[in-house]
Image (cartoon, rainbow, N blue to C red):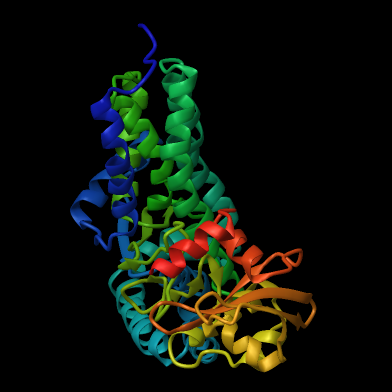
Length: 413
């Protein structure tokens, strides 16, 4: 079979929409179709010679991890876990999550896991978990599924796909499809969620990625769409893998049971495809669990919900990345007033601005252009410390366009 060397104009035009389609599947708020997910899980378990699992769905990864913790505690430790984690979660995550997630989770898990399913689940799962064989359980089952649906499948599909694509087209699909989706789904959403859950003491491993794997599944699907062919076994496993990943977020496979998380109901991005929420969470789940980020940087929830940082707090915040985000949230022009900026060059025109320098804690001197926009709002933008005049600052901020040309445009408007 001859290699596919380039996309047709129609395929080229379709690529952005195809990428967005898979991003929407992962982040567009679609809820799990239980019947469809159960069918795909049954097929996945059949691949490793296991019977169909019972399926339990929770509204967020945090709820799933709490459920697993309760499994591991058993009936005896349930009441103790409730009181301990309720106090911890209330102080860390606030009353909204406590009421929506924890109180509901306690009653639901108690009835579902320990009344309706006690004989089915605890005999299969609880005794092993109580005897600290959770890691062995995952190694016996999760690793088999991981091998069948992830490691082997991914390498096999990519090997087959790349053998059918020209090198230039391979690079194009990698940069425009695989890499962009991976950055948003895996590098940002996955890593932010992991960090927060670890910090909150909720993290439970042994999961498979679900929707966060759609970045490489989309690449394989698009290759198939433009004419690449996969062997029958790989194509079938791709169908199973995509079926599961299109339905749920993280999922945990055990003997006889799968615990699966719903995907977020809302995800917000900035123009650079970074997680970003200016007036609330950047990522929300149906039970109230949420991530708060500012242009990809995790921040305290209060900064964008009810209490922005003060200039003094922003300038002395211990985490330097969060400090930079705090300064952006409240506006650098407020920072200038707080630290007593020194004017180095003044154009005399508020719209053209003045060049100032401030001494930032831990960072030292920093120069900025302090100006007014056309709507009369004041702003301050960082410029290199080598800039010596307002004209140089304006040129720097406009990609090197000479100040004479910029001034001409400014005066006409």
